[in-house]
Amino acid sequence: MFYDYAKVFVKAGDGGNGIVAFRREKYVPMGGPAGGDGGDGGSIILRADDGLRTLIDFRYQTHYKADRGSHGMGSSQHGKSAEDKILRVPVGTVVRDAASGQILADLTKHGQEVVVAKGGRGGRGNTHFVSSTHRSPTLAENGDAGEERWITLELKLLADVGLVGFPNVGKSTIISHVSAAKPKIADYHFTTITPNLGLVKVDEGHSFVMADIPGLIEGAAEGAGLGHRFLRHTERTKVLIHVLDISGSEGRDPLDDFEKVNKELARYNEKLIKRPMVIAANKMDIADGEDNLNMLKEKYGEKYEIFPISAVSGQGLKALVYRVWQLLEECPAEEEEIVQEDEVKVTKVEAVPAEEKFTIRLGADGIYYVEGAEIERHYRRTQFENEDSLNRFLQIVEAMGVVKALRKAGVKDGDTVNIGGLEFDFMD
Image 1 (cartoon, helix red, strand yellow):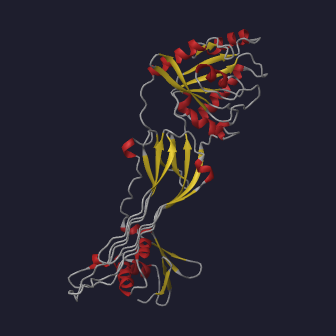
Image 2 (cartoon, helix red, strand yellow; image 1 turned 180 degrees about the vertical axis):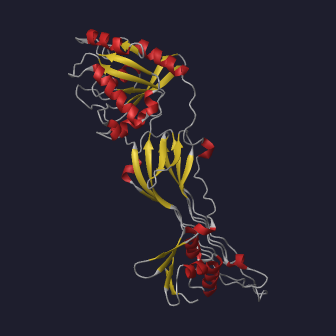
Image 3 (cartoon, helix red, strand yellow; image 1 turned 60 degrees about the horizontal axis):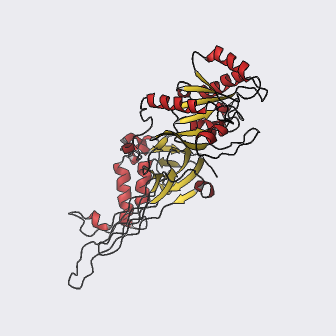
């Protein structure tokens, strides 16, 4: 079964906690600190695999979680870092952050990877807090939380040529004749509800990939029917074959059909309508085909190449295929629009400016909330059951300018302040 869209939740593993420990050897009565660091949590990584053709695996499982790192141990033994969880996706998958819509990666080559959720860093053991004035520190850090987010996966088929047109105009019959693809073919609308790919051999050593895009309807660019799902697969094609029922056997005007489908392509993506396009005037073996073909040539013959064909009998298909191959050879190499292979990894977050490290908000409950990624990260790392760790957290809060900012915000003695869930009475 073909699935070209999925929305999944990914949660990287948390970092293991560092510990407080000291050397306790027989002949070392005053042993120094020996608390090991926690291991790093596992990351969630997507890897492009050209052996996959669909996102169906993500239909049945939508939540993925990596393991956390092991906690540190005594004798300066570091905890083991967790293994990354690698999820395989088809080549041609576009990865987006579901909340912002930002493109994280466009995986167009086999083996490309993107880290969609980075594992948390392991916490430091007490060996890291030795100083000239504090030889036996009794504090350590918790590991950082692993990143988590909802992401969307959109599969865009990697095809050189796309067959577009209204339903039941003969696209599936064409691809079944010129390639080894065996799509479902019947005389009713929407026989094809998923894209089909076929390898078209032109001659010895020359071939191209053709995609049979399910029939479009008016309003497809706005998502009518499954418009967006279908149109997505035209974006990577270099040449379009616009298939028309030139006989008008469905009671429609083929010239009107041509204008409507082109309008939907342009509304979805202006670049599509600017790509090389040829017209396949299909069903020439049915009455009224010649008359409609003459009208088509009169109106569009100077702008588009028109190939009269019969997909059922195979008439005219050889000339169509050969001309499409020539157009592909003439197409300039397109530049990558989203990310290059060596830029696929998620960009490292830059240091946060001091004024953005925290914000102060007065809640409806009269509590002053100190919020922000930087202050919350220090909060998570602090082992509050340890007095030395608590004192260090308060020193960090002071050094970040939180106390000064609270005074400036109008906090008075006795007011309640909340930092990351820790509530305390403010005392100047």
